[in-house]
Image (cartoon, rainbow, N blue to C red; front, side, top):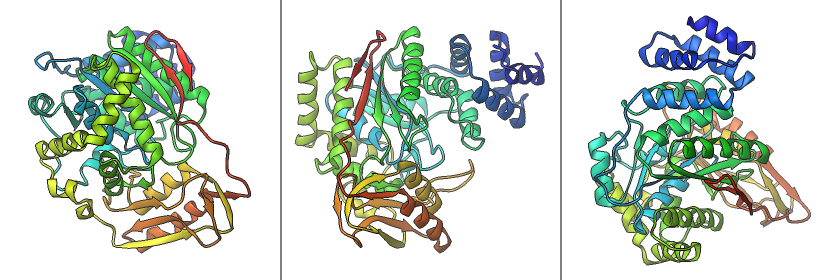
Length: 442
C-alpha cells in the first residue's frame, strides 16, 4: 500500500488493515516513509483514533521491528515500571533501587523529555559520567550484579518506537491513547520483564488531563500487556501539581538522593512506597501487601535502597562523590524568587505551567536536537495547602540565560493560586487497575 493511501484512509476515519499498520512501521524503520508522511499519519491517528485491533497490531509491529531482551539467565521475577510522565516525576530513579534492595530485579528502559521537562535519562545524565547508552550485555550484567539498571533504548529495541517517540515530541502528537499505548508497551514487552507496574499520570501536568482519559489509557496498557503474557497493572496518580519540590534534571536527582536517605517530600515518598510495595509483591518477595510495604519501608530506613542506588550509579559510570554530596551536581548560575502576591493558603500550583516554565529556563526541550541545561529548573518553597504571607517565596527559579527569565516568571506567577481556605485534600492515587481488569478506587 502507498503511504499516501494509508494516510488518506486514516484521515477519513477508516480502520486500517493489519498490513497497512505493518507497512507504516516498516517504512519508519527503513526510511521509505519520510518524516513528513509519518507525521501526517500520526496526526491523523491523534484526530481519528485507532481500534483496539489496530493498536495491538501497531504494538506488535513495533516490538517486531527489533529484538527482545532475554533475561532468563538472571534468577527471579523481573518487574518493570513505566510512567506516562509528569512535572517533577522522578519516581523511577527512587523506585528502581528501592525495589531492587528488596530483592526484585528491575529492568528499566527510559526515555528523554516529552516537552516540558527532561525525562529520566536526562535526569540521570546530569550525574557526571553516568552512562545510559549501555549494550544489552552490559544491561544484563548490571541487572545481575545490582538488581536494577536504567538505560536508554538501544538501537535494536523497538527501533520504530525510538523514531516515532522523537517525532511525536515535536509534532504535537503525544496525546493519543493508541500511540502512547503502543509506544509504552512496545518497549516494555521488548525489555524482558515478567510483570509490569504502570504509573499513569492524570491532571494539568500530564498528557491525560482527566481521570476518565487516564483510566482509558491505563486499561488499554493493561490489556495489551496482559494479552502479551506480561502481568500488567496500572495506577492512575495525581498530576495537577508538581510531584515533590524539585523540577529540573540535577535538582530532581538531588531530591531523589534525599528521598533514598529518608528525607524526601512526603507526597513523593508515599507514592514511591505504594508503587514499590506492589512491585515487591508481584516479584514474589512478599506474601501480602502488608509484608511488602514493611520490606519497602525497612529498605528505605536501613539505607539499603540508597546503597543500591549508589552501586547502580558506580556500575553505570557515574561519579559516586555526587551521590554522597549532591551539592556537586551541576548548578545554574542564577536564581530568582517568585513570591506570594497575597496572604492566605496556596490552593493551586498548576503543574502544566510550572513544567512549561522549567522548559523555558532550559530544563526541557522543544526540538529533538535541543540541548538541556542540567542545572536549570525550579524549586517549590511552598506546596498546595501551605499557609503563606504576601511576599513569601513560593517558587525559586534556577537559570542560566537572562532572556529565559521573564517568560518563565510570567508562567510561574500565573500558576500560583491563593485563597482564604486550604484546598481539599487530593489523593495521590485515584485508581488501581489490576491484571484481571478489576479497578479499585483510592
